[in-house]
Image (cartoon, rainbow over all chains, first blue to last red; front, side, top):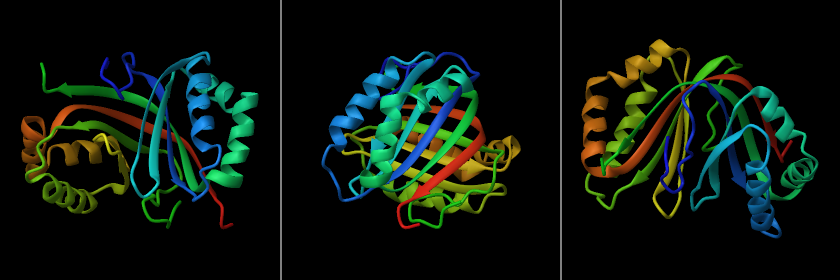
Length: 114
Length: 114
């Protein structure tokens, strides 16, 4: 849908969205490297459709990743290096997070240039 | 699910999520007042369950609002003052946005304090 920076170029619905809302802790060590590595790894997973992410200056962030199926999401959750990153996230990098798995039913967009 | 600041205290699924990803323009006039007013108005709409929002220092933001039904989402989209704000958003405040309407099937959370 979007060739714009920061926007995921997703296909027509239906597809799936994992909404990851998180509050970062004060521990920075290793975070940005691991976050970058997880983007690379997720992008290479079967069924990955795209990702959008924003974090404010208070450390509250929302990352939405898009997937072709629930099986693709389960595959990503169980990926070995990702499992290790999830554990490190709980131990060090996040005070709090919520994960919601949803099925995208409808989508539309606006572009001021068009 | 969350009494934590910035996190929506949503019920058990199923419910609906509107994922609004946006790139702000360079026009600030009126934006923050209108954004704040829309949060107040949405919160008073029938079927509103909560909202989470983050915007980074490049102006890329993700706001997810949670609703009890597709009818509740349609009611909010058609709310008169919100319609005017949507038009102003397209004219002034956003270079680009994407809206995805999804049905939350599963949800879980982590809290480092527990």
